[in-house]
Image (cartoon, rainbow, N blue to C red; front, side, top):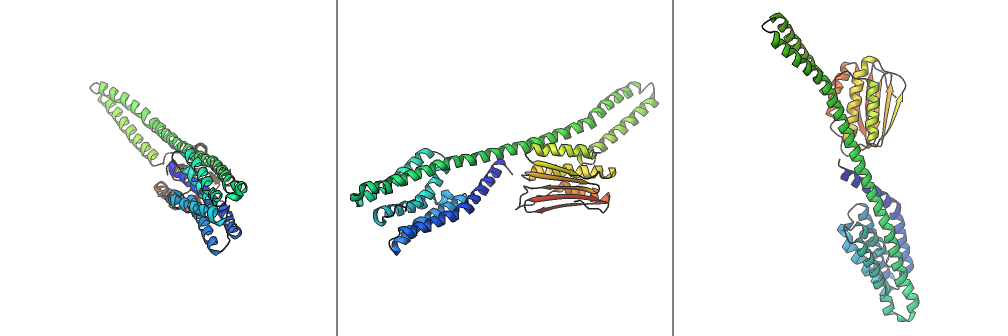
Length: 371
C-alpha cells in the first residue's frame, strides 16, 4: 500500500464520519426550512429540490465523488435560491448552495480563493432578485436576502479551508509513516547484509590465505597442501550451510535480542508496541520463536498499517497481535507458511489468522496455550 493510498483511505474514513455525524442535522435543517418557508405545495416541492441537491452533494463529497455531481448540484441549488428570492419569499432557500458550494471550493485544484469569492458574489446577486421584484422593503430585504446569505456563505467557506488543511496534514502524516516503514525495512536489510558479511567475510579471507599457502607448499610438502585443501573444503561447506540457514531464517537466534529488534523496528514505523511476558519458554524453542517473530515483524511492516502491536511471551509460546490489516484482502504470507513445518517438527503449532483489521500470529509448544 502506497502512502497516497493510505492517505486517501484516512481521508475517506474521516469523510464517512462527517457523513454519519452531520447528514442527520443537514437533512433535519432542510426539512425544517421547507416546512417554515413553503407557502403552498409546489413551493414545497421546489424548495425540497434545493435541499436534495445539497444532500446529494454532501453524500457524494463523503464518498470522494463530489466533482462528478458538482455542476448539476450547484446549478439546481442556484436556481432554487433564485426562485426563493424572486418568487417564494424564502430567505432560507440558499441552503443548497450553502451546503454544496463550500464543499466544492476547497476541493478545486486551483483558483480556490477566486472560486470562493465568486460563490459569495453569486449568492448575493441571486438574492438581490428580491430587491428588483419587491423594491418597497429594500432595507429589510437587503439584509435578509443579500447580506446575511452572503456573509453566512463566506463564513462557511472560511471554515472549510482549515478543514482542507487538516486533510493535507493527514496526508503528510501518512507519507511520513510510509517513509518510516520503508526505513525500518531498509534497516532490516542492512542487518541481514551485516549477518551475511559476518558469515562469509571471515571465511573468504581465511580461504584466500590457505589457498596461497597450499600453492606455496604444493611441491615441497604435498601432504600438508592436501590438508590445507581439506580444511578449505570444510570451510566452504560450513559457509554454504550458514548462508542457507541465514537465508531461510534457520540461523541460531537470540529471542530476547529479536524482541528488542522487533520493538525498535515497529516503533520506528509508528506503531505502539506492548511486550507482555510471564515467563521464558524452553531454550530449545528459542530459534523457531525468534524466526516467527522476525517474519511476523516483516509482514506487519509490509502488509499492515499497524497502530498497536501486542507481543505476549509465555512459557509455552508466543502470540503477536496487530491492528491495521487490510480488511478486504488477506496477504499471502509465504514466510510464515514455510516456518509452520519447522514449528511442527519442534512439537508445536503455528496459527496465523485475521479478523477484520486485526491479525494474530500464535506459536504454541508442548500442547500448552498462550493467553
